[in-house]
Amino acid sequence: TILKQEGRSVDERLQTLCEYLKAEVSYYDWVGFYFRNGEKEELKLGPYAGAPTDHTIIPFGKGICGQVAVSNANFVVPDVTAQDNYIACSLTVKSEIVIPLFVEGKNIGQIDIDSETPDPFTEEDERFLEFVNTEVAKIL
Ligand code: SME
Image (cartoon, rainbow, N blue to C red; front, side, top):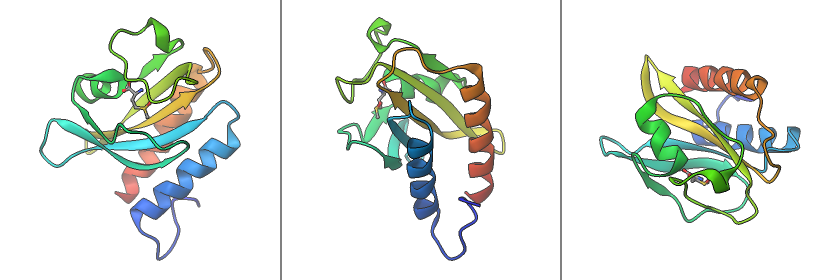
């Protein structure tokens, strides 16, 4: 129902989705979408809820997000300080989960969630966010 909002653009629907997820799950402190920037080997920030970030463009391979753009696999980070290839958006962030978004089998972006809680993400979050992404794929 969040995604099926008549007369609203994709960006508006995703914005509402980000705000909804951030509000509903206590340990989701920043929720956003990154999408492949055209044919370039980089990600561009899309709709998000939470503190503004300077990282609106992320090259493929860089940070957790950039690695998922290349690996096509979920990336759960229980402790961001243990990651070498990590881009800090905020010093209060303790953990992160990134789930790739596939359209017709192609990795076209991802949902990225930061948490200020250490090690909060479970397989349930992975399954739930995979479901969210399959629903998002239908409106793109
Ligand atoms: N931490 C991410 C960068 C994006 S911010 O979390 C919004 C990364 O390492 O890719």
